Image: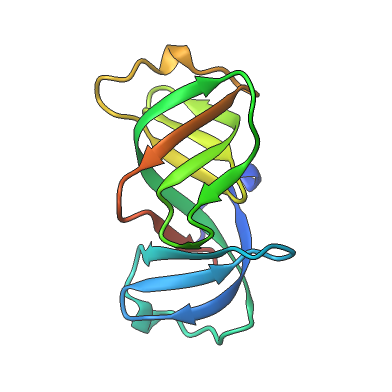
Amino acid sequence: MRTEVDERAVARAIVDRVGDDHIVLRVPHTEYRLRFALAAPGGALTIPAGARIRGTITGRALRIHPASAGGRFIEPVVGEPRIVAGRVVALDEPGRRVLVDAVVPMWLELEENQDPGLLRAAGLVNCHVMSGTTFTPLL
């Protein structure tokens, strides 16, 4: 059974490697090698290194800050995301999350005390993210 996914939220990448509980993705045409926790155990994911993959990324922001300038990036370039900057693609106020187009699109869940009304569609934002950002493959 496949559920509908907003195409704006779909990350496209190349599998670098899959572990028991994580996946490392290469972002085409960049030096990024991003490590994500897998939403399901990696043993269930049978995709070889070098294969293209699509999926959704979800993280928890410590606090999202509106920005007046900047670009789209994730730090570090290699490893688990810690700092994210990008443009707001969509706001899900009832779900308390925001879709940010950084190097790859990712849903970021807001802190309980953050007012989602401070964020605007198409606005620039930046934030730190907690450990455990997940990748959910779309098969």
